[in-house]
Image (tube, rainbow, N blue to C red; front, side, top):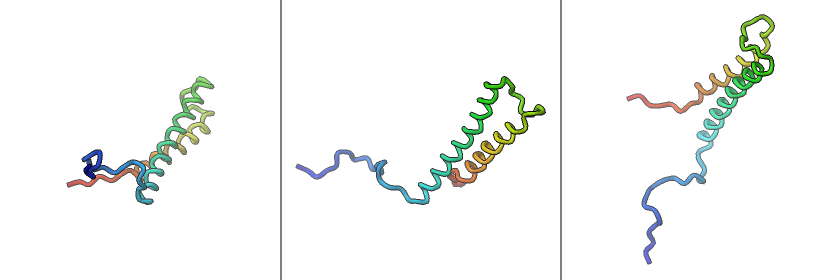
Length: 88
């Protein structure tokens, strides 16, 4: 019997822990995406419930503010914490 591994492909198994900085960055990106989804879902739910899709119409300022808060902060967080690509 030989002591060769079952696979000759070098890869890091998924269950091995990643660095805490990488985990924190991924969680921030996921949280930012969730915030954007919440903002879009709130706008969609309001439009379906009240049949009013124009947020800029008088009387819809609260919906506009909530949508911008969630979507804007989510987008800002996504841009700040996405993985940086090196340009060569």
